[in-house]
Image (cartoon, rainbow over all chains, first blue to last red):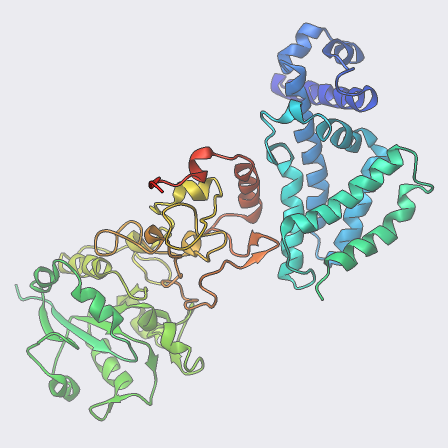
Length: 198
Length: 295
């Protein structure tokens, strides 16, 4: 394996370890030595990859956004209706919340809750563009085909993603009586009815 | 050496390209390179009767206006058959304007039967094969006078004019109207204009500007040597395109806020990624008026 490839792998393993620790213990309570210890590497070496905890935090949000964006991209590339795409996107989101809860937890409990960390370098949608771009493409395709109603992007985006984020948050708070999977059909239908053209 | 013989014929037209060419600051210097056989508004050696008689022979034929195979006569003669008579013997044919090139405005009157000389919108029509080897397309509504003088002077000098697949000179049409637009900084940072006629802001997002996907050099070769539509705060109407005219020219068609037509050749994912990032930053200078008048 080339040195560059090895470094890329190491970099990703740091991101994943940090992602878990930040999601589990919170951003402020997790230290760089904690992350280094989890990976059995020296603190000094970790700093070779990320020169500060803030920079690491920003790279993690870019990473999670890309991972989620890739999943939605695979849905966008399918020749199926917007209604079917909505169900698939809801499935992807809830599956990720179940199997990789740290990804969604990080977004909700670190990225959205510690804006001071992200204000320089992650302005606006800079660090979540991988994900936002695919959502834009989903909406654009839906309106172009006549299946979805043309409206302001954020009114549609907030309805879709705010809804999903809220459900995962409720699950994290152990308020939901049922497993997330059991809500997929109803939630997909609700989103479709809210977005479809008259 | 004798001068090339130049003939300007009109079909269904508003005279827009004729008038545009009259605005050329070097009109008579350019025409001095040619023997002008006939022109619809300039005084020429021959009149329309000579033209109809078919006794003239031209080297360069300029066509203005859109065409129908029959039903438009001048002096009792079908214009299209008159045009074909001269087109067959001409060495070069220039379709001046979008009507002559693609059908344009006048095509809207009868979509079935009216077209450009060799193209019906973007499709080649039945005349294309006959005239393709000598055809130069100059779409525009109207064309810039210097686009025509560029072609004419290149022909006089016997220089090769590189053309694209619709026979448009690459020098003039291989850039978009966006090239050279004075609002490029606002486009880069996705800052809308607040209204027509303002100096600030980009017209692509709301005001219907088609500059980023319209081929033409309106912002490289300025109109009257000083300005362009976008310079003065009016959207580009896409008048050089085969699809001209579209409707709702003063508003951008969007799908949930996303422009329905992307800048020429730019993949949608690339555009949306760049847009999302650029929009995330508020650049103070682009939010301010360029000239701050005393109130």
